[in-house]
Image: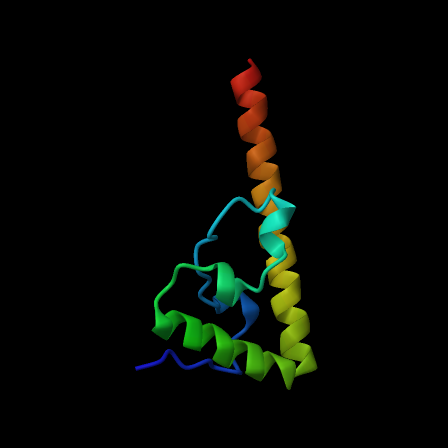
Length: 88
């Protein structure tokens, strides 16, 4: 059974998959996520379903992009904090 996307749920309530690699490595963004992920077929189908629904809803796409941007910023900040702690 595939996970269904609730179009009324906000980006804050979305379930995000763990990253497949370091977000600080830009080479990881060259291939589509579907290709570079090592997730099951069910998860890949769910990702495709989300992409299709987002492509037809500009507001949902904007919320999704804003949430991804915030997650990337949080990850970069966490990595910077860790590297500062190691230098001490």
